[in-house]
Image 1: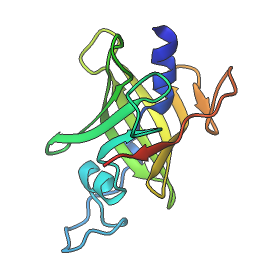
Image 2 (image 1 turned 90 degrees about the vertical axis):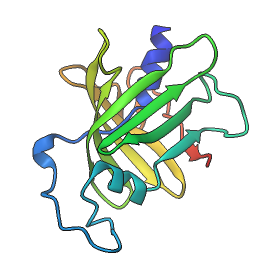
Image 3 (image 1 turned 120 degrees about the vertical axis):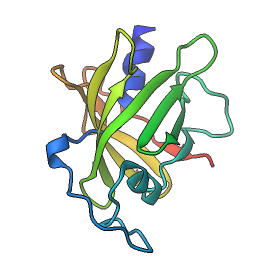
Image 4 (image 1 turned 180 degrees about the horizontal axis):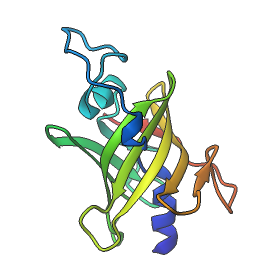
Length: 165
């Protein structure tokens, strides 16, 4: 179970220190990437809201996580990782996000918010062509778990997730 949690952490979420966030801009009729001022707008602009998997036609499993990103209320972006029956669903609350480049997103998340194992994590995702992949993952105050898209200590590549819907 610990390995499954560690692997899922590699897929997890979004990191940027609050001090690095941009000042809000006045809204416009058409929100562009430079005008996205809220988490929800940024995630919508990058087409991240929805369900993701390595193979959308197959059932969720440790090798094929089903990742759902939703906005249950204004200002709240949630990411849930389901890997099948018999496994706990990992939940991430996105705290901050910042576009680093055209295809890279830095996020800070709270893993398992409100539980005894709650943990802040910093992540960087590669988002392009209807896919996303974790390039970097580090819990606050902890060792790097993913660097350059490779799981540290294992050398395996993080999976590329495809948008299912």
